[in-house]
Length: 80
Image 1 (spheres, rainbow, N blue to C red):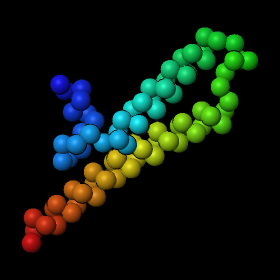
Image 2: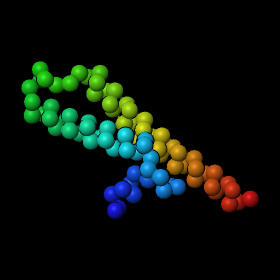
Image 3: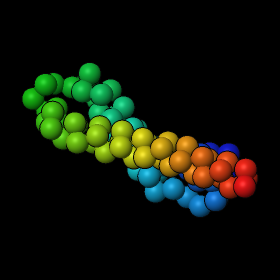
Image 4: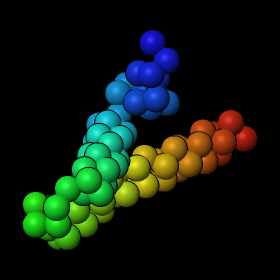
């Protein structure tokens, strides 16, 4: 299934950072939509939203950094 390919790393294993990052992004999007239609009194705290935001950013950021770092190592090995 093509959807599951999105969560796999270069070695073919499922990357927990990608899964957590995508789930965090979906939760943030859902929270934003729900808050736009609900009363301000029942909105989640700003600190909670910021925490989920940072976890999502860091998970997806580390996944991107790993991809480029591994790509550089592979390129250096091929040149030898």
